[in-house]
Structure formats: C-alpha cells, structure tokens
Image 1 (cartoon, rainbow, N blue to C red):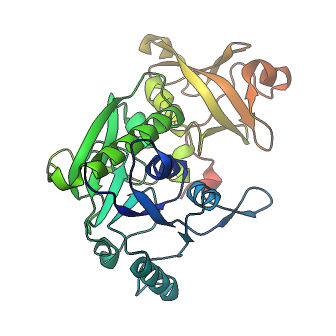
Image 2 (spheres, rainbow, N blue to C red):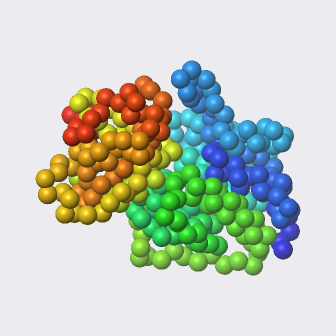
Image 3 (tube, rainbow, N blue to C red):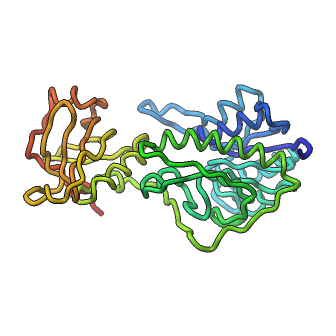
Length: 335
C-alpha cells in the first residue's frame, strides 16, 4: 500500500458523495481529504430555495473545508472564482485531486495542481460512453454491461489513460437509479483500491475503437415516439425513469409516464392499428400499440397532478380505448 495521500475531492451529486464517504471514513482508506470542491448552491423546487449539493452536505457534516467556485477558468466568466480556487489549492497542497461527477470543466492548470494530477471516477467502460450521461445512455442502448473506470484526466473529454476498471452487469429490470446505486458503490471501492496502489499502477491508453458519447439528455428526447419498437420504448423509460421521465400527449393533454413494460412483441397485431393507439385500458395497465407490439403503461401522471398507479388513474381517466397518443412533442414545441 502506498503512503497516505492528501486528497482534494471534486464532486457534486449523490454518485460523488458515495465515493467521498468511503474516501473520508471507509475502513480501507488511510487517505486524508483536506478539501472539497463542489458546485455552488442553486435554487431548486417550487419554492426555488437554495439547495446544497450532496457532496457539500457531507463535507459540512464532517468539518471538511469546502470551496464552491462558479468556474475554474481563469479567462472565463468568473475569473475571480477561478483565481480563488487556484489559491485555495495552493494552500491545501494536495497530492492528488479526485473528480467524480463534478459538473465543471477542469482547465489545464487544475490538471497540474497536484503532483499525481487528477483522477476521475467515470461510470462506464471507456471509451464507450464518454460524456455527461453514461448510465442513462447504457440502459437506453440496451447494453449488457457497464462499469467503472478510474482515469488519469487529460485535456480531452474523458480521453485520459485508464488506471483501473471493473465491469458491472446491467440487469433486464435495471433503471438508472438501480444501476447508479451499484456503480456508485463500485466506484468508491475501486477508487480506494487505486489510491492504495497508486505507485505501482501503470496507466493504459484507451482503445481507439468503440468510442461513443453519452450526450446530455435534452428535453426533446422525453417525448415518446410510438412508432419505435416497444422494447426501445421500455429501455428509454428505464433510462429516464427517475429524471426527467418520459411524456406523451393525447387530445391536447400531456401525460408523464413513469413505469411500464413490453406486454407483447408481435408485428402481426399491427395490421389495422395506429401507433400510439390505446388497445385496452384497465386496472392492469394502459396497453398501447407500438411499431412491433404492445407497450403497457403501469404508472402515469396528468399534467399538474400526482404520479398514480394505473388502477387509481383509470377511476377518473380522461382516456378511452381507441384514443391515440401522438408521437413526439406537440406541434407548439417542435423546433
């Protein structure tokens, strides 16, 4: 095991907090977290109250120093914030900076701010799913596995050499939430193992084949296209089930879809069916025609209403058998 390291941790959401907890207080970690970088508090919810990040919450609870620059670019929109962060890192004098879902671009000076550079916990098996939403995109694409890479960061977008990696199967019923939980735990474990062996590990360049990008999820993607295969709709629902969710519309009313599954794959049933047509509506679900079968909606929400299991929704449902959910966004939202 290498000597204990002085670590600055840069991260924001729950995925990052899991690693911070293990790095700070885990039984396998002998390293010292001397400071935390996390994104600024931001208004959230209907009351738009300032909300702190999961990482900041943990740091404050445990007396770890926190800095929240709006940017790290010395030539950017907030140069004073970046200069303050640079000076703070000089005071902290870390041996290494660990980055996990931080959400800010790290310019060149940050990559050189510690002798061991910046290590990133990335939730995919690089070079597959570089970018902002690797867990969502892996489920949406129907991948059979995901994993964690501990990467030596460079100036590119998730292009750095790999110090360690570990795979994780994607189960048939996995949502982004369930896979996120397993990967967060795996990432924390692999980070500690990597730091404990840092002096004896060699970084391996990423393959040049198999590169793909997990682009940030756009609102336009949340509209269901009923002309797609039912299994594709199901994967997308599992990928988007937590946030932002999927939505569809019928007769001018918007509905959020939170839970559902493939009921039947059978292209032959589509002879006289319109994509998006409600074939049946009952306490077991709302059965909707897709390109190659039937998709059953099991949890739905009217605009301005609450999420409902289907047996509660149908008691006052504005929908009827034969109605048609329209594919894509309403015309008013189409670019």
